[in-house]
Image 1 (cartoon, protein in one colour):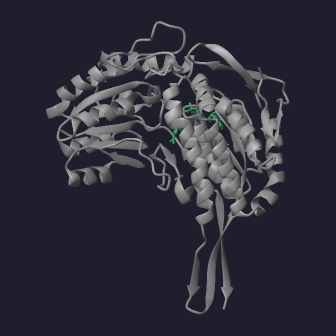
Image 2: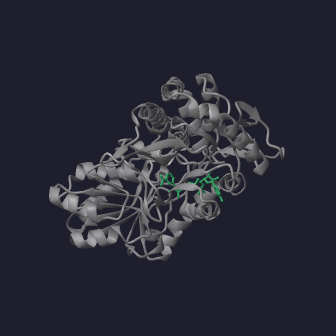
Length: 474
Ligand code: NAD
């Protein structure tokens, strides 16, 4: 079976006639073939989006809202099918796809589909001399590039605000997980979203993705992916003065003080370490525990990790599914080997599972210093390090010891310390005694090499619009 690009409301084959195999990472079997799109396909999609822009940008906000809410309803009605597609395409467990990925896509369309109704402009009267007001206008064709780890969730995180605020878009989902993007295209037609408002081009990043970032008719790029790719996107898009948002990688610290509620800290750290096989940008991968409770935490954490069931992602009872690809499996197991060479001990898991598919046991590593590569580089798999610390100052220094700054978690029952430490950690998000709770109204993004710009809430609507100051003499 072959998928097409979704351009101007129709599914089209790529100009080149070339296709890419899309594999199920749990079985290594080809599920479908997707277009290996090139610049010509991107040109077609951008032309379709550009043609749809005048009418869509003039469509009243209430009507745009109605269509996006209809799309949200359709995603919800097809939740089970979408969860199955996501699980087969990505290797994630069906239970997580059902609980997290697809409901969040619904929430994204509902949130931005209603936010647009409440988003206004400001007026600044100049003491009876003049009146300034800020007009917000959509930018045109938005280029949206997303990764494979939360395919529909992150795609909808971009499409929903872009389209809600009156832009049309060309989305380039990851070549590793095209299935739910394709289904979203079908559902957008069913919802009645006009042809050309949402376009989806499949293919490799270096070809189709790059073509989007350099396209003269695409004034805005929203990218989520790795830091190295983000640098390439910035290099290509910046000389063309595009508006860019970059949501990049992380190496998130999880700081556990001795006074923490350890029952909660262990249970939550299991999720923040191994949900989605550790393939969530917000997963904590460096766990720091105050020395007085280090042994106790480690013992309980290892025991809880050993109870996780690794297996068929479509099995309701599986806790850990397959990694996304053979390449990624090599990368993850390579870091486990590197940990040993760097002098660490793998105290739990870390072996490839003896079955077809890209399965690896969740791994816990101890005995490494904060400057080792394993604690510095993003692994993006089910691999965490556990390190003791002494006192608040050292905890903050350890947490801040990488180039990244995406998310952090702090566990303590001391209210003042919780706020002090949260403020001192260089991170776009800090969770205190919890993980992954998200209010869609808050700004989201990374510091340092974890990204530039903020998305979420009205900030996303502002990102996808241009402000114009209009000054009227009174
Ligand atoms: P990736 O950077 O390899 O790919 C992301 C997307 O960019 C894909 O669609 C890919 O095809 C495309 N791409 C690749 N090269 C390109 C180029 N030269 N020009 C334009 N597009 C190009 O990332 P990935 O492996 O798909 O995802 C994992 C990474 O994403 C991890 O680093 C993870 O931390 C990060 N991530 C970050 C967030 C966040 O919100 N900060 C969320 C999820 C994932």
